[in-house]
Image 1: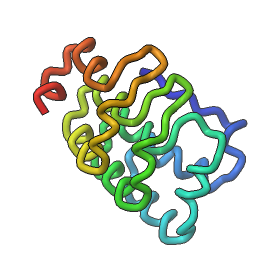
Image 2: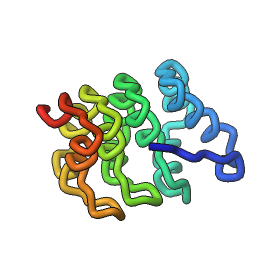
Image 3: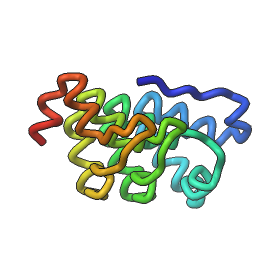
Image 4: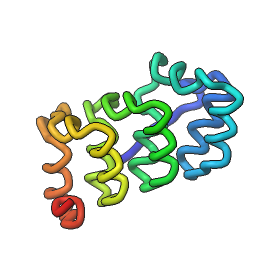
Amino acid sequence: MEIKITTANLEDDTIKTLYNASLNGCVTTLNTLIQNKPLLLHKVSLSPYNETPLHIASLLGHLEFCEILLKNKPSFTNEVDSKGRCPLHLASAEGCTEVVKALLLANEDVCLVFDKDDMIPLHLAAKRGRIGVIKS
């Protein structure tokens, strides 16, 4: 799975900082950004970016980062990228079992979201041999 972030898409330095924090799983930066800019996650949600910070953190298995995002912006679970994948698709494909559990606790309906290849998250987990995800 690949996430493409280009600086052309990240005009605002605060949003760029948020995306960098999601790549690194830096919860300190995330908490500071949310505290200083309470509407930041809403701004990201309304922006044209293909992936949310939750997509990135889910893909990379940053559980604590994901949990903070889910607490502050649970609707990120419904957002899909350019391939129609929600964060659960990415966490499932990468075998990030604890992130999968957190995403399902936040919104169990996303387990039935089909991507543009007509695959649900469980299909991706099975395809990539992610037995831990399948069992959860």
